[in-house]
Length: 284
Length: 198
Image 1 (spheres, each protein chain N blue to C red):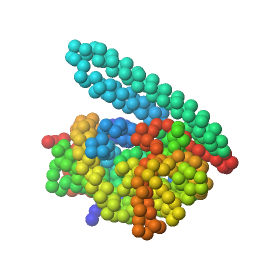
Image 2 (cartoon, rainbow over the protein chains, first blue to last red):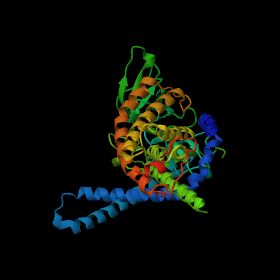
Image 3 (spheres, chains in turn brown, red):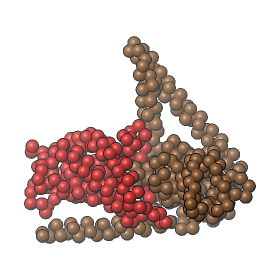
């Protein structure tokens, strides 16, 4: 074997071992390795926002064109004008929706008055099934620093649970959505003195946009249609955040193994603005 | 001086491809999906860079594109880099002994690379769960892979067509501008030096 080839194989093996170590280390909550992405986040933030806006506009334009495909050929000029106007209307509607979301955020603030609420925009979405967290423009410069014992709840403008912050760099944060198999939260039915159980993401249910309810106590009576909210146990998520509704209860011969399916309220496909909650007595 | 300009051009063109495709991938609308799967632009880029321009390019592009992927949507750092680096290396090595590099074989390699990528990541997710406390079953992961694989193969093949043309005609090297081969340990002449003579 020639020397260059030996060197190359050695380099590849070395890089592989290094990357495996990086992979394992970066999964630790609060790993400083996550800050390696800070420069790229800062650099790409304006580009991403511009690109997102452009894609939205192009998308709106093509939507408008496809919707007006039935218009007669002689109406071409009107069709183009119509598409342009529709595009403008879409943008105005979007601006209005964001205004409504911001207005809702004020309600959110009054509802969870022991929490600081910081709004953020979704910057990037998942890349397929395996790279499936999304990024928001809220990071450690906003006072959010994820550690082994500290994370932050993420909700939408209607204060419905979206997920939790799983890593931050200087300018951005990664959100683990509640459908993800790594997500779990203590929850209860929205009634007085309901027993606690666990709501978690499940690999098989993710495609159906459902969560799994397990660890259901023997005395718990779950019914289809029940609203499920966070219990507040564990301290990460404040009590009372709506999660979703039960759509199916799976009875089991062993009553300790009962499970149920939950349809989350949040629309993860179309969410654009999120709010991160930080307890006000939490040290930065 | 001439060499420096060539290197600068190469780096700049690759940087534009990696940044542009990496960002585009994370903001693609749902309408870009086929059978529920969106194109994996950075994977296709790494495969084609390795296939067209050799091991060094495939490895470097794979590493950098993987870093973008990890930074933008990964559960941690490193996994995307590792996978795409090997995708680039695999593409540089595969077929080389038997075939000349041409566009149609590049597209077949995209399909093959996509399938192997999904197989490997399925096994890696099972063997090394990136999230602590999460337990996967191999059968569950395999079933999931089978569900998404047809869409992934089709959509990656389709985006591979414009991308291979882009790399071929507006790639990091000028046509005819890379006379010597970078894979210095290879016995055969490969890369630009070969496919440009066809």
